[in-house]
Amino acid sequence: MTTQSAVPATKGGQVPLKEKISYAFAEFGSQFIWTTVGSYLLAFYTNVALIPAVTAGNILLLARILDGVQDLGFGYIAERTKSRWGRFRPYVIFGAPAVSITMILAFVNPFDGSGAKTAWAAITYVLLCFAYTVANMAYGSLAGVMTTDSGERLTLNWIRNIGSQAAQLIMNVLTPFLLAAFVINEAGKESGGDTRSYLITMAIYGLIALPMFLITGFNVRERITMTPEQQQVSFKDTVKAVLSNGQLMVVFFTLLLNLVGLFGRIGVMYIYCIYILGNPTLMAGVMSVFTLGAAIGTIVLPPFALKLGKRNMMMVSMLCSAVFLFAIFIVGDSHGLTLLLVLQFCYGLSGFAAPIALSMVPDAVDYYELKTGVRADGTSYAAVSLSTKIASAVGGAISLYIIGFFGYDGAAKVQTATALTGINVATNLMPAIMAFVAFIPLLFWKLSTKRMNEITAELDVKRAAQAEALAEGLSRDEAEQVAEHAAEEAVAHPGRD
Image (cartoon, rainbow, N blue to C red):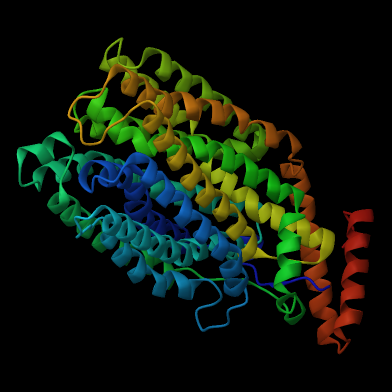
């Protein structure tokens, strides 16, 4: 099989500063959708729509299963799309309006009957998941096709994460107060919001998110394309290539395990603030210190991955996350709010690995392309996106099942002691265990910085040799043979021109 063609961003594969900055905007807008959904949708279902916790958990699982079915298929379609904007940018540009609209609809429940409420919640959540996949999965794939340089990919995802942390910091401060400001009765304030306050708040966030996606879509450029031969690889073979890429699976399972805990925690954190901390507006402070810690961590620490290794930094992140979560579970609010906030900050600081993990995906794609000749940018990112979707569904559902098992009642103003224990287990102990288990897959990662430099150099030689051979009139099979020989020579004699 032939390798892809690539046009470097600039000399050395550097991405222009304008594009790097523009790349962060879609992530900024994305967080106004997905972090809002992850942090407040479960509370909306149980406290406002009054859907039982177990039923809400089933909705999450159903929607995510359906969403997961489309992920790999959409990734396959996206990476073979031909348009004036490239392969992935059109879905960022035209998918953004659908994301904003469906997010608002998910926080509206116009029915009173139990069956109708459940059906509306399930349908709108499924539509939101589908729209978000189209826009955000295409967005996430861009880093792998904007440059061939592994370091630049880390930088892009590092900048992307800054956009994420900035949005989360703003939202963590504003959301609880917006929900309280727009309520129409005292009961709504006590439960953390009502139908009116949720609708207005989500409409504001949907309008913020839309132009953010468009700024990214119109300002970045795709530079890595697929050859006609690679485009003809069947969906079955593409999925096989993804599943047989061992290094990609390391990233998949690490993210899956860790995010099950993280998403499960985020989903019930608002409930934790309402009933354990006793004040829903404390969500602003609790999540803000977490986000501040995460922002500092993701700004300062990821660049060290190029020297210390991406895997090693990921391992440190997983272990530290587990330790701080377990500490929060033990002390809770029993030693005062100040200690809780300090531990929240430390937990956020330990979560610096997000941009590192995302930069490992195109590294795994390059590794597999060099090994087999097959490249699957979109489908590979779809697989990693699928881990996020599964984790969101399973994590949210597990948390709801836990609090439901311990007797949580969303209609009750005061929870039993047993129910409070369940909230603490779901919010802190479960994610601590999952963070620790997520350490295990990283033991199998073998793409060090040195190895990635070698892979990049070998791929560059293959691409250049193939392009030259095609220009001289050789057939594609002959050009592929020339490219393979050139790569073998580059490995045998790395210093030879």
